[in-house]
Image (tube, rainbow, N blue to C red; front, side):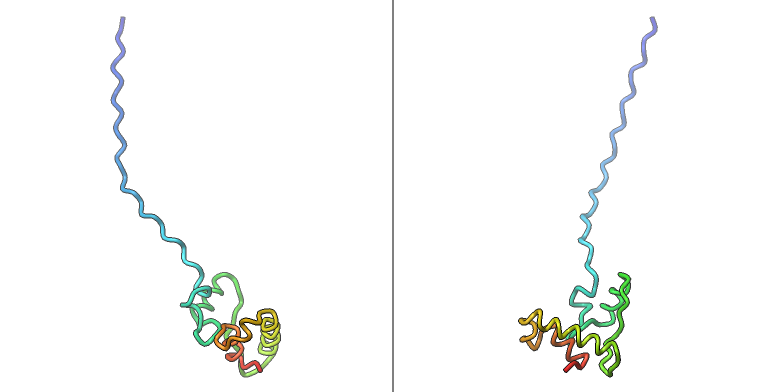
Length: 103
């Protein structure tokens, strides 16, 4: 009778260092303070982050034109929908309307 060779001992797996917990992914700059203009609207960094998401955004057009008329009409509707923001002179809505020179 032939004897079976003894089974080889399995090599223990090496212990890997624990991976660092991943930081939460940052939200887009246009949603954070660093992408917002303190005087209302977005700054250039905020506009770039919005463009990266596929939006077509341009700078304010306070000197006049179709975009200004359209924005002022839309934001007037927001003033009606959000009366709390309409009463606060430091709300983002009011600051943006000042920046666009809406009456």
